[in-house]
Amino acid sequence: MFIASTESHLLQHLSTEVRHPPRGTMSGKIKNRNAANAEALTGGVSCDERILRDCHQLYTDPASGLISVAETVGVKLLAPRKKITVMLMGNHSAGKSSFINWYVEEHIQRTGVAIETQGFSFVTSGRKRESLTGNATLHLYPHFKPLQEFKEYLSTEICTSRQKRFSLVTFVDSPGLVDGDMKYPFDVDEVIMWLGDVCDLILVFFDPMGQALCKRSLNIVEKLNDKHGDRLHFYLSKADEAGGESDRQRVMMQIVQELCKRPGLNKCGFDMPTIYIPNPNKPSRCVNQIEDVCRTVEKTINQTVQNTLNSLEKDCEVISEAIADTLSNDKQVSASNRRARCKSCFLTLLGFSVPLALVALLVLGVLSKELLEVALGPEGTQTLSLYLAPAVKLFDTLSVEQQLYGAGGMVLLSFLLLIFARYFFRTQPTMSGKQKRQLQEKLEYVQEVVKTKKKKLYDEYLRQSVSDQDMDM
Image (cartoon, rainbow, N blue to C red; front, side, top):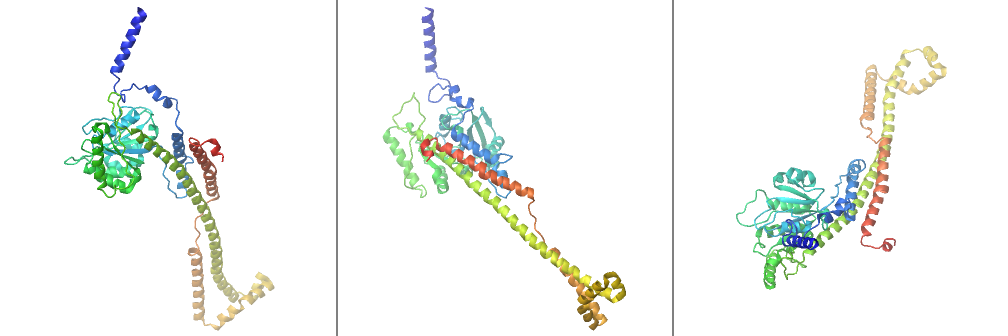
């Protein structure tokens, strides 16, 4: 009887849990958070996540990062982000926040018919559940600094979920767009357009409840399509609430007709999958293509990994060329400095030779031949007389006044030669031997270490989808 009573009690308890699932669970399922976060708790990360993290570290390492190496040769680099940014936009109550909750499998964003999202909310994964205000958000995302004046309307929600590919995604939940007299406390169009420039993916949700044709939404979408048409993806959200299949088709036709009126949106290959949040308690015959959204996000992640690795290789080449050019230019400057020094020395000697010649003339005129022979010897005196004979004869033919003018002119010529030697043959600064060795070491680091690391990361990325025998070909 005790065993029977125990079994009856357990069955009653389980039936109660099924009838009343815990709050915050998605799709009416009881989710085991320990199992969901097993990878996070063990410190395991996916291959793509580790590749993006290692690439970011190669750029930002304080000792030998590519950014610091590039700065030494006047090249500015930007570190790649470790996650992709996905912005969700559309009219209010289009299901943007509900989709984020479904994707992360946690109740992070408020949902409802009313306008719940007043500003821009970033949703990202982290070590613990946390809510950040505007200042903390800009500190976490420094590349969003241009939004400083709108910081009061920025927030960040950090959760520990690692469902799907959330560890590599940062969602941007935008305010619901409405027409009429609705006024926003900031220029929402300007912020969305700026975020469109920095986001990797833009998901546009149209709901079938009469707000899909919001002119404000269509105007912004048209502008975004002109600049980033490849990033835009359209979805008919809450498709299970559109009624029957004929009603759903009618809604789709109305939305597509309105979109095709816009020249920029009237393009071939237009696609608008139908999506809705699955609910076992509310089955629907409508085809749910919400998994296509996940595949689109995953495709963007894969493309971002490839772009990051390609940018790493390109930046290595740019740094290597800059270092090589710097060393080559320094070598040319050193050769030019040697030529300038030779010319400067020649003009300096020539400038000093003029006053020395005048002094010699005065010495010959003042000192007697006997004193010169005592000082220079007979041969020295004869040689000096031989070299100065033309100048002595020339001065003898001049009057005293002409001799003074001639001496003054020679002194002026001497000053001019010295000025030329001093100012017109200046040397340019060059690197020291230590600096050149350091640059050479950085060049070898980029060529041997970073490029080798990049090749290894690329191989690891490709081995996820290519067999080993194909990699060895």
